[in-house]
Length: 240
Image (cartoon, rainbow, N blue to C red; front, side, top):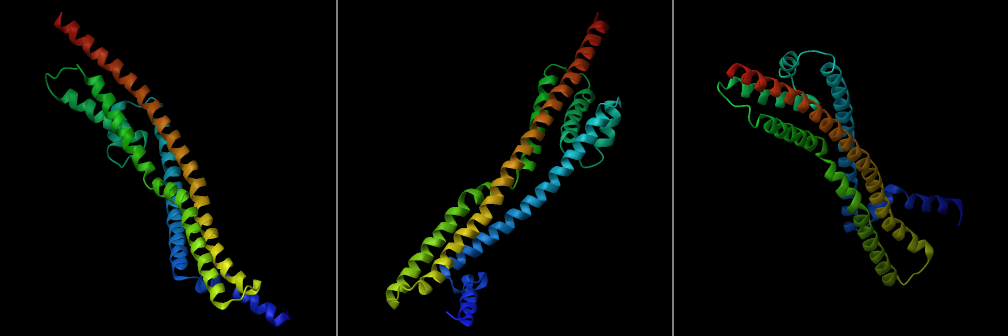
C-alpha cells in the first residue's frame, strides 16, 4: 500500500466517516447515546452547582443558629427569603410552633409529635429536590452499554451481510464496518462511565446532606421540646 492509499484508508476510518457510513439503526443508537451523554452532563453540572450552594447555605445557617441569636429573630429573617436545607426545616417547624401559640386555648398535647412530623416532611422534600434528576444518571449508567452493544451487534450483522453479498473477505473490506459497529459501544461507554461515577458521588452527597438535616432536626426538636415542657409547667403553676 502506497502512502496515498494509506492516507485514504485513515480518512475512511475517521470518527465522522464511521458515523456517516454506519447503518441507519446504528446512527440512531449513536445519536441517542450522545444525546443521553449531553443530558447527563447537564444534570451533573446543575447538581454540582446546587450541592455547592446547599453546602454553603447549610454551613451559614448552622453558624447563625448556634451563635445565640433568638429563634424568633432567626425565623423572621429566614422566612422572608427563599430557604434550602436546614433553613427550610427550621422555618417549617417554627411556622407550626407559632400556629400552635396563636390558637388561643389550644392544648400543647401532641405539639411535639406535630413538630417532628413537620421536620420529617421538610427533610423528605429537601432530599427529593436534591435527588431529582439523579435517576436519569442511574438509568443511563445501567442501560447505555447495552444500547451501545445493540448498535454494535446490528452493525456487525450488516457488515457480514455486505461481506456475503460482495464475497470479499479481505481485511480492508471488513475493518471499516467492524470499526463503525464498535464505535457504538465506545459511545455507550462514554455515556455510561461518567453517569455511573457521578451518580455514586452525588448520591453519597445527598446521603450526607440528609444526615446533617436529620441531626439538626433532632437537636432542634429537643430545644422545642424543652420549651414545651416549660410552658406546660408554667400553666400548671398558674392553675395551682
